[in-house]
Image 1 (cartoon, one colour):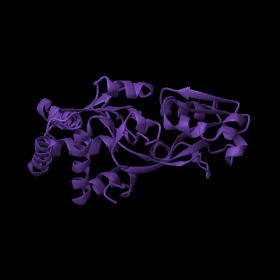
Image 2 (cartoon, rainbow, N blue to C red; image 1 turned 180 degrees about the vertical axis):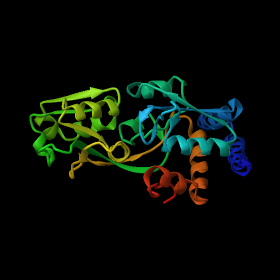
Image 3 (cartoon, rainbow, N blue to C red; image 1 turned 45 degrees about the vertical axis):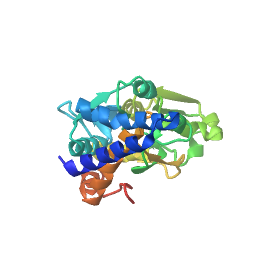
Image 4 (cartoon, rainbow, N blue to C red; image 1 turned 30 degrees about the vertical axis):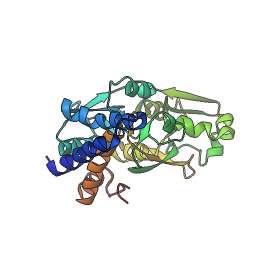
Amino acid sequence: MKKSLLTFVCAALVAGAVLSGCSKKDGAAAGADASLQKVVDAKKFVLGLDDAFPPMGFRDEANQIVGYDVDLAREACRRLGVEFAAQPINWDAKEQELSTGNIDCIWNGFTITEERKQAILYTPPYLKNAQVVVVNGGSPVQKLSDLAGKAVGTQQGSSSIDALDAHPEFKGSLKEVVEFQDFLTALMDLESGRLDGVVIDVVVAGYNITQSGKDFRILGENLGDESFGIGFRLGDKALEEGIWNALLEMAKDGTVAQIATKWFGSDISVIGK
C-alpha cells in the first residue's frame, strides 16, 4: 500500500475541514470531505459496472470480472489501502444504483455528457472513445446512409442511444432501433443476420473483433467522439479526488501505461496528459 498517497489525501481533507468553519457553505464542504473517509473506514470501495462490456469490464472463462477499468480500479484501491469490490448492475439503472448508495462509483466506460453532469460528478477524462457502427464483413453497407431502411441494434441506457438521438436524420432513416441489455447480445444478433448494424463504442468494437476473430468491420464514418470518466455522487468530491490522485500517481510511475498496453496493445490512456 502506498501510505504516502493516502496520508497526503487525508491530511488535505482534515486541513480543509478545519478551515471550513461553521457556515452552511463550509458545512457542505466538510460533508463532502467525509466521502473518502467513509470508504477508508469501511475499508471497501464498491465499483458499479456492466459485466458484459469488454475490454472495460467483463467476465472471463473462469467467471471472474476482469478488464481495463477493473485493473485500474483494483490498483487505485490497493494504493488507498481499501478492498476493491466489483458490483454488476443493470446499466439502464446505473444512476439509481449510485444515488441510493448501492455502489460508490460508476466505472465502466462511462461516457461524459453535459446532461449526465447535471446529476453525476465526473473525474477528468481517462480514455477517449467514439461511437461507431459495426456491420458484418460481407455486408453491402459501406457508409451510414447505406443503413437507410435497415435494422440497427445497441445497448439500452448507453451513450450510443445519445449518439443516435444526436443524429436525428440518420436515426429517422432506419427501419428500427433495437435496444439490448448489453452489446455482446446485439453483436450476436448482428452475426446471425437479425440486425444490419450495431451502434457501439469503438474500444468495445475493436477489442471484440480482435479477440473473437469474427467477420465484423467498423464503418469509416462515426457518430461522434467522446470521453470516458468515472462517475460519483455530486457530493462525493473528496472520494473523486482521492481516486483521481491515485490514478495520476499510477500514470506518473508507468502503471497506467502497463495496464493500457495489456488490454489495447499500446498506451492509449489520457490520464495526466
